[in-house]
Image 1 (spheres, helix red, strand yellow):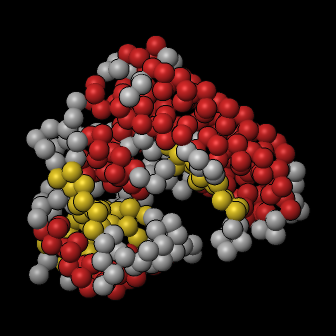
Image 2 (cartoon, one colour):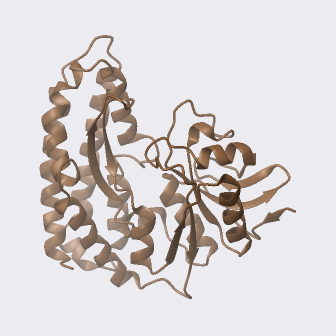
Length: 329
């Protein structure tokens, strides 16, 4: 028996998670821009990794991995994350939640999704389940202009994948409960900015601003790796493409700050939107340098990329120290 959410309006987005949350909020009667979702989700982050078992073996990611949880906490939305090893039970759980009346967020590996056509595994792609029929699941994927259909067998493989970043193979799905209104943005925005600053400044090891320092120290040796070309290409993609909105998510975060200036005057007082726009542009410049290196036939000199990363680490540390000062939690 088929079921489709009535009056659901699909829209493309710039990032799978934030775009899906924006579509979800609009359906629930609480429209927010995608940059506002990025900001309330304290979405910026950084992690540097080297592991020969990965492809590429040297990577960094410029976003945190708790966007959905942080957004809901700041916006005043109740979130439950469900996990199920049994694929049939995982589908039943998601379907039953959908039929209760709200879209259900799914986590999938794009390699296994029939409609996506990817040759690369990425097991962190967020979509919304908005219906089902005799063809299978009806999916709102912000990478596409139109609603997508996915057979249940391939959807099960995509949801239960053990590839990174999800790894667990437990088919997570996310359900949301909204109050009559979201938390007032005048309160939610400062708290989210303070939270974002804390995450970047207090992170240890290869995470946060310290992780950026580490990347700056090690990027110069990327040319020695066997997969140097793929590492450089992936670095460009993870900064400028792959749903970041440009500048390693910093461009959308700058847009969030600009949108919030009138609601929260301290943003303008500290020029946070202007400073983040500059940081976003510098991330884009790093991405372009990585792209240039990836297009060489022989390994090039990664020293300029390393220097750009070191400069970005300093810029971001100064930015988040200023943000923490103006928005002490």
